[in-house]
Structure formats: structure tokens, C-alpha cells
Length: 376
Image 1 (cartoon, rainbow, N blue to C red):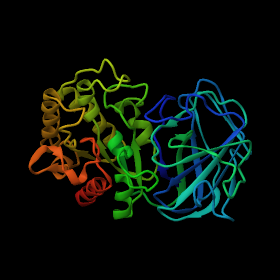
Image 2 (tube, rainbow, N blue to C red):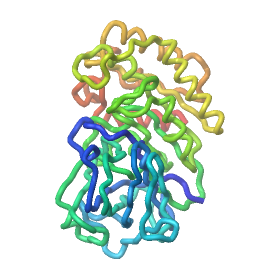
Image 3 (cartoon, one colour):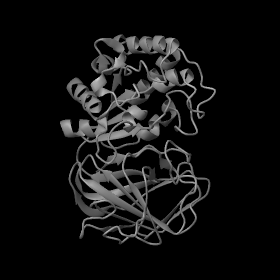
């Protein structure tokens, strides 16, 4: 049985928060990406997404290995991947492919390097904008590069890679579904300090991160991906080995109309609590239809941030009151109260605040993970 051990939610090619290669795509290059798996097993396979491609994508070859330092891999661990027995594959527009299994023993929370050779023009690349860890690019076929010297360019996004799966007989996985708070904005890059990482370390469970920075529950965005109620099936329900999902989503739906900082979500819809509650109910129905337990999280305090305003404050309180008292979730974790400053409950505690009064820092993410671990 193969289960999902790592995932990143696909997004359309876009400028994103930081420079990336999604719009230019790749040609006669190799792409090396490092991820940390949440479960171990004796065999591994990868999932590649071309969800937002408009023409076929040629994969000339791929390898997987245990990660070394930077772009290097552990000597002796490199494995060639095949696709239906072939060295490469062609993925149709808006399609995906899964490699054949490769013999490679992995431990939970071990880092894995996936390298893909792209010998033909890819066009704009389906990607995940905020990886908070380095990915590498080099000219030509670098599939067998052990030391990583041939990878001279870096980015903090993932491209095409949407899943790593291992053979494991366990179905206790949990998916964290949300926006930048789940994606890990504010955590230390390259250090695996997202709250999904902290939860996996505390519980021993396989924790999948299905966050997208800027994502909205009820509206699509060119930068921030498909709306939550639409992508839930692909980014949560499609994963094998999962028994629970934790939902922390809606703050951008409430707060984007309060700020004039970013042009990517203008004009931002002005939404009421009833619309957001209906969206959350749609997620609950989808999860229960697949037999998953669904935990609702109250929204974090955001006073003083660019999302804050009188209307946003009122709507967020109404949504949180429903989350706490409706009885429609299988469990509730009250992150709002846990993360709030006792002297000013509308704001994050100073010691948990990354600095924008919206996102937690490493310690804040640890506290969120502790709360979910205690809630189960």
C-alpha cells in the first residue's frame, strides 16, 4: 500500500511573493528539489502535476535519493525512476503522472531529493510558490550529479512535484488545510519549522501540508491558487493514508478587502460570516463523505495587521463563535484564544508574532502544533 508522505498543493504559474521560475519554465535543464517525508517505507515513488499546463510536458528522466547538504545527495542512495517501465514520460496538459516504485528505504522525517531532467521546452510551470526551502536548477542532464556542483541557481519554490509516496501500512495521516499560516510564512526558511513539521515531530503521525499562501476559501486568485472549496478534493481527499483534516482557512477572505497593499486580489469581495460558514460546511460535507474526521480551527488574532478593520474584526468573531459552538466539526482547536495576547485579545502574543501581526514565528507555530496534538 502506498500512502502520501509529502505533498505541496499545485498553483498556476505566477509572479508570486518572491522571484521564481514558474512563468519562464524550463528547457534543457535539470531541476533538483528537496522535501522532508512524514512517513517511512522501503519503496518510494513521486507524483508530478501539470495541472495548469496548456501543452504536453516532457519528462526526460528522474531520480530520487536521500538528501545531502544543499544540492548534494547521499552517495549510494541515488535511484533512477521509471514511468510505466520507461525512462521518461509525457504528461498531457492539465494532467499528472506517478512514477513506478523505486527501492529506497526511508525513515520518517528524512529529507529526500527528487531530480527531474526537462529536455524540451516546458512552457509556464505548475508550481508551489512558497517552499521555504531551496530548490536548484542546472544546465543539461544532471540526474546523476552526486555532489550538486552542477546546480548553480536556486529558488524557494517547488515545480511540478506534488507528492512523494512510500509503501507503508498505516492510515493515521493528517492533512493541514489552509493559507500562508499553514504554508509556513514567518517560519525560518530551510529549517522545517512550519506547524506541520512541529506536529509531525510531536505526534509521530504523517502530517501533510496543504497550505497555499494567500489562499481563499471562496474565491480563486491568480497568485494564490484555486479557492479552498474547489481544491479540497485534490489537495486533501485524494491522498491515501489520511484519516483527519484540520481546517484553518478564511482569514484572507475576510481581510483582503481591508488592505490596499497588494494588487492581486482587487477588487476584493466583501464577505459576511454566513458565506464563510457555508464554505466551511461544504468542506465538512466533503470530508465526512470520504470518512475523514475534520477539525475546525478558529482564526488567529490579527489586530494591527494589514488585514485588520472594524468589519473584518466583526466577521472573524462571528465565524469563530460558530466554529466553537456549532457542533458541526468533529473537534475544535481554539487557536484564537491560545495565540492571543491576554492584554489585547485581538492581537497575537508578542512572543509568537513574526512581526507583521498576522503570521506566527517558529515558536508560535510550535504552540499551534501543541494545541492540535492535545486536541486529538
